[in-house]
Image: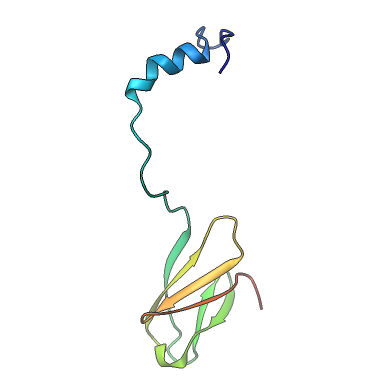
Amino acid sequence: MHARTHSTTAVAPAQRLETERSLLGPLPRRRFDTAYVEPRRVHPKFPFVEWGGVSYSVVPAYLGQMATCRVEVDSAILVVTCGGCWWATPAGAV
């Protein structure tokens, strides 16, 4: 932090921090989940789920069931969870 006065607030950032420190709460113990998560239904005749216009295969035992698709922000890995099992694949792969 520097002591130079900010042109918009007319207060030095170090001084502003001291004023606002009592208003700040502690950070959460767990990081906020920013992943893209969406429910998808496995196709009733073919063992695929669709994500981003691409079909991804799952185990045929899950035909017609609901699955959860998840991609972390800035990640290229799609994780599909269905019936207690999960599969990971590069998102956007053909």
